[in-house]
Length: 170
Image: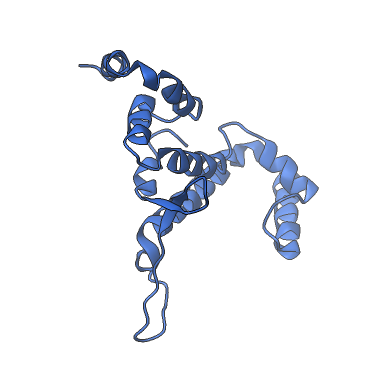
């Protein structure tokens, strides 16, 4: 059964999921009905989807030139004035060499995508994924949780890295 037919079948089975699935589709997520089913089953689907969407939004869209404007204006959220100045100087060097800086957009996107995927892996797998040095005999780890309406912890958010798999979402 093709995916779209399966999605339609699930919607016929669970028509109440139509609105929820439209929300997930608006985020550009694959299989929005599956996301809606997960939410209905008590999984932290909204929190996970929002985080995945936010991470993917950090990668410049193809043929986007906003990154050029941000560097020219010095409006890059890195908190390091020297790095911002170096980026501006590098951009000027590229332009002075007669290279259209828009040709660098795939390079910028590749670096951004790598950072996003590395962050997703780090959030999923903790310090061991990056071999973060820890003091001898000491352990550190973290977990992400959704938060309930009353600010209490909800369910654990896991599996970010597979959701940002590079299959075309970026």
